[in-house]
Image (cartoon, rainbow, N blue to C red; front, side, top):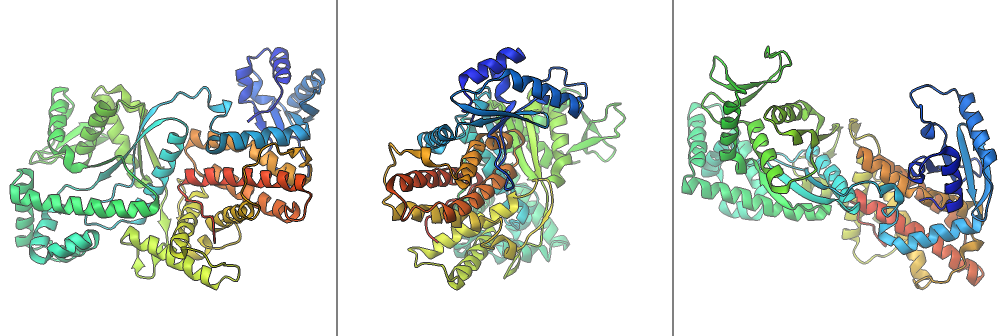
Length: 577
């Protein structure tokens, strides 16, 4: 957000011979520094230098910065112009800074930062995002949890920025393992348990039948069951439908605890017949080749020497996972006609998606260029008291119970209305912040103790800050603040908070460009640290009414921006703890 005056923009644009819109991205808010009071905005000389191909020496950039600074004059808005290493720095009139920033935050409320001119040139798009995608009857491993929270973040951010988002959960609900599961259910299954706890029951059945998976008789029965499924035998299909629908019902309930929803529950089963059409298309285009064993492959090598290929058909003519993915991609594009299609899965599937996009391109689908695999690293060491993570619900229960324990033993915990629900929201914030602090592509070691610390850079600290600011507003009557004279906010602690609030749109812009939540996480943690310092020094209680109102206004703005950022990350802010 740039409250640089129009006259400064015009002067810059004239001197530099650049249209004002080109300047918007070259002027950025200066990050807050603990060491010294600094300017509010800087113009990077490098970013406006036309011949950016040639390397500019630091000396050269410094000289250009000085020459430019000399041509600019201070005005009612800009109180000081100075130069830094390759930058021209602007300090905004202090009274105006407080007024502009706080008015903007309170006026735009949940849209603060999103209405910024940084996004004015970004076209609104249609995005389809596939994430979570667990396999029925198998473990919901930690990779699925990462996919769920990362996909949810990207969908939240895109939706907030005005894009049209479709969230798809593509279930592993088809394939040979369902032959095995069907046989297992006929032997060990229980209709009541299937209804009451489908995910756990199907997993137990699958584990039991797997012990006999290598026996010839079991293999034959499983093959028969799956063949019947593919031939749409009524009894077999009806059992499979129950597996699927009961599992989805339970997933919806658990996703709700996570604060996640989907617009579509799709799955491999939808694309059985369509994947046969894909094989026909590949054959017609001359892309399908048969191997000696009778499997169908597509040559992906540049020189057409099969140095890289993808198997798309079994020797018996049935489809594979990638064939169903091809059918799904084509179907989605026909149905949603989207500008971008994203797949959020761990990095071990990079090869699969590379092949998928390559085959689509070979088939003549130019939109394959608009498909993207958002990959992420692996998490080590996540265990619950029951041992290794098998069900998503175990992770949520663990986070909640550990948080409840911490709350019970903390001296500062007040009596709160619904401790269990609050503990769940704080525990979830802890999981999400620990996950989002680094680059998504890096692996990390999970630690419950580190995630749930109340001091330091954790989700617990963000929740604590939000609750504290909320109770400050409650204590002082929670009134709508209008006609407050915020010009009196001149203390260094207040200025630091205001300068940091200025940067929020740039942080959102960065995350929207590289889809990394860490920019927002680090911004919110800094905001919380600055608010903690300000809360100690800028007292509301016992101050003159005008000053108290202004400070309240500042803290309200902090809480609004903190809540907005937390919600984008998939965290529900708590008001008590």
